[in-house]
Length: 424
Image 1: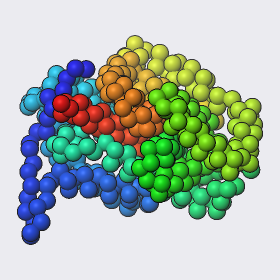
Image 2: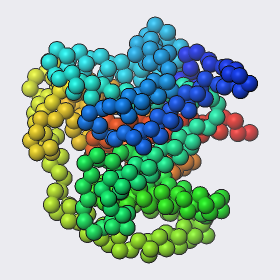
Image 3: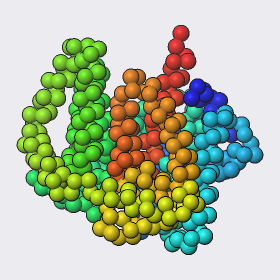
Image 4: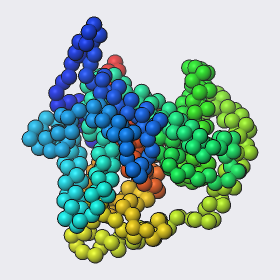
């Protein structure tokens, strides 16, 4: 945990500026531009869980490959064993990724699982470990990239929220009247929850900090729009986490400055007054849904998973492999290839050994989250909310933006470390 960013994720090859015409272009800048463009294309054109991937997903995939580069992919896929240029902790993380890439894949192939289901498991693994590919590029730029990515992801969530309301043909002001249905699962994208938390906190931050009233208003509108899409389909966990994040922010601010805390409280009270009918309606819908579905059979799903992997000792240790399916009580007893939490998904597909590998990765992420809580609460709260939902409640861990939000958190942590190191 004490390993420095420079030692842990030093780029394999230092890429310098190249001259195109009269403009000096840096390769790392081009990669970051490709990443930002891939997020924009994803927000406008793709969906969180595409049933039949097509042109939008192909374009996003090509842009992601351009942002990562062949060298980083080769290094993470086994090159680190031949060229161990990075610190021991990074080597451990690369080893965890390589184990999860190879062992469950071999098991899935030998068990004869459908190739489509195998691919649908392997690609999200790459999403989850995206920071391993891109953090070296972020480090190389020597510019604070965490907040830039946070803003990009948050407005990605706003775009997806707008798409949701356009798709169902409803107004955000209709929130709280009834539970809406979205066949594209757009509000389930992690950036929507990220936007609701991050933008609302930044709205308050810009307001009491007198940084920009325009940014404060735009952030408030964007955050409320994202929150409205969550409320429309009654996402209980994300709604609760958003409320908790905002409450903690107000408490932390008031403990540092009573005046700032008062300003935020007044602004929050005004927003609450303006949306009171929607809030009352939302509370009623949440209560109604809780009474109807409770835990959505997630406890029975976990029991079914434990019964599946306990059939033999090797299944217990290594799981059923990528592409494996099981009869899920949480999905109306249909055979599915996903579970409703990253924990149960890891146990089912990769067994205890694979879950340990995933745990090593999250141990590292947790260590990078702690510094952000007090120095960059907006990113820490938004990212941790997304992680909690994916790890415990929803299959959002299989989306591209889940991995990008983890990358954002780790990039902000590295930015803070740089600031601390450069401080006099």
